[in-house]
Length: 492
RNA sequence: GCCGCCUUAGCUCAGUAGGUUAGAGCGCCGGUUUGUGGAACCGGAGGUCCUUGGUUCGAGACCAAGAGGCGGUACCA
Image (cartoon, rainbow, N blue to C red; front, side, top):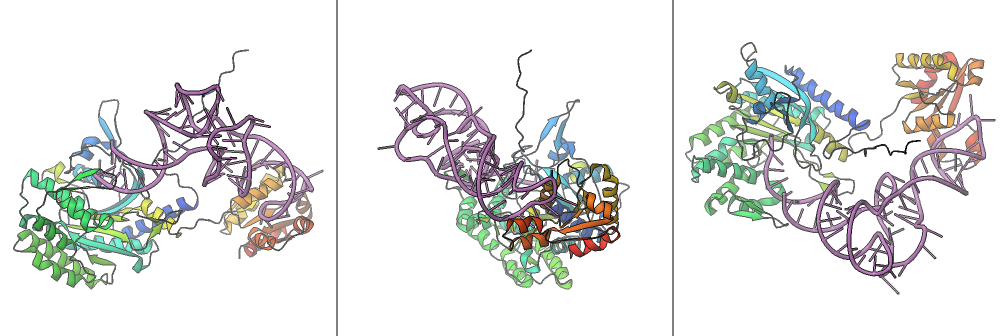
């Protein structure tokens, strides 16, 4: 015979940064999505689904911070040599959709979208290369009311996700304030100035992680981190650094107090006054609707790293510390963020279209909740109907159908193994009960229901092996007509 | 990308000063129990010690390079 050739066997491995979510985690994620979608739909937002792939120029061209164009996206060319890219968020496809279908769409357009997005970046805790976002955006609404609504929606979603009001906060700021301050301290309105502004944003974004001293270096000449790597700074003057840091520290828990603290920092800047007016309008609405109870605060240290925001920006943060499996504190980053981006659609249409939105990182949020132990790690499985006689499958199926009709999750064992293995299977599935109908029960017109939860409790007291096997604890036998009552009793 | 740490069974790890047939716990499979999961006892399977090259009579252990993982940092739409 021919030589035995070793068949190629690939190693089963999951790509880095891509997560498998099974059972309880997947259910929890679905529940989060459903809760958020429900909030958005109840506010009148319409669902929009778009494709995972977009032409790369539709995604990439409107990235203002293009000191690194196209890096971070998964892209390839199709048969027509067109560059395709997996979407990295849901906002860029929305801009494309709106620009493509502008005329017939209602304005303002209120839409929400859910789906996976992909980023080719180094993964970490709560950072994935594929993750699910759920977004709500209002397109064509210039006023601060639309921004205020986004903030309240974000809070509503956090509520719907089951968080207590003390456990999260929506931080609000306005890009125009920092622009005003940078103008006041002499950052010019040139390309070089734009780079300084971008570096300043990124530096402030690191405040919570690195602290004011490191951020001061990043605002100045630059910073060398513990590993010896050097990051070039924004090149602000010493006076400028002091001013910027003072600005980031002007936040207080009370909306009005923060606003009054910010006022003197704006000087005579027109842009600063504009930004403050917008924040005042937002604050007034938040107060009127009762969201000023600590759920929403103005925090000047929130800037969002993204360059395209033009006005109000917001971020949803967990206030509870998360830990990993080893009990070490873990930083998950924000659960969501958003803001006003009046120039994004202008890339396609040539004229500005006011827009504001909020994006909720479902996967990261689910991971954080999981690490908090908030997601059920043990999901209750279905009632398992043992398949003891191969020629009685129709009978087992009928019992399963009857249980389902009574709103009880049920399945028939589909494997080919014996009773012991079937019991182990039910145990591994975390089944609350099994239904046992073998030849004995069938001939007697009876069914046996075993309560696995109770059985496990009782097993703690059973020492004797005989008693263990023959006692048949936690199970009852009765007429087959009372199957449903017997199962229901076992479930309670 | 840069820096550091790590890589031995499915998982968590031990492996003494380089010295025969590489170990433990948990898990998995089987038996005690051909109709009973979870306790207990008994037994079993499972390893190219990440890869390649080098040093050595001899390498899981020492050296070098590479790959992969983790962490920090950068970037992050």
